[in-house]
Image 1: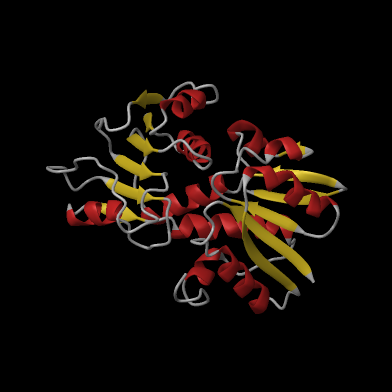
Image 2 (image 1 turned 180 degrees about the horizontal axis):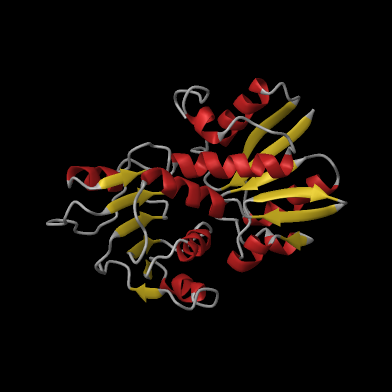
Length: 267
């Protein structure tokens, strides 16, 4: 039996095991997918289990997408550019780090049908998924990307890799066409972004990378304003599909099919 794992902290919110085990069952694959909450000090030990054939692959979520890099042999082009890894597998006895968040985010944006060309994007957060979002947005032709994070040094570090982004202090609210919550604010019901969105026109897109819960306070605010809203469910599904193609080397049904008729109803 093949064994896969998603690691992170927190990890309780992750629906990865439910989705992947569902795919295993539907495709008659003898495999199991689990989740594990770890500390940073445990990363090397967990990754070594792939090298020792105790695990067949690992997905990585917050806050370890860059912390795993020193323990890998090779990075994909996408991971090199973003310095972010969410998928680890072994090929020719080497541990490979790949980033499927980029493709997942791109495809999820296409689902919204929101025109990004020459638009200004405001990103809240500077964590592991943000470099992937910035990379995808630049490919899609946005005119300006503004980033804000509670720890400003993290946003300044992003400029080492993406020199064209602008940085504003946490709590500042620039003009934008699309706002993305890439923080963990929203995992708990009482979480609040703390920005004032009153008198905002309805042409904006509110996007939250969080998919569980389905509607955060951030998205509810956008919805109440009459703006278009989108959570991270489709990004989650698409990035998982890309990871499956890398790690499992089999052809699955399309993510769209899995997200509707074949997805567990609570995912």
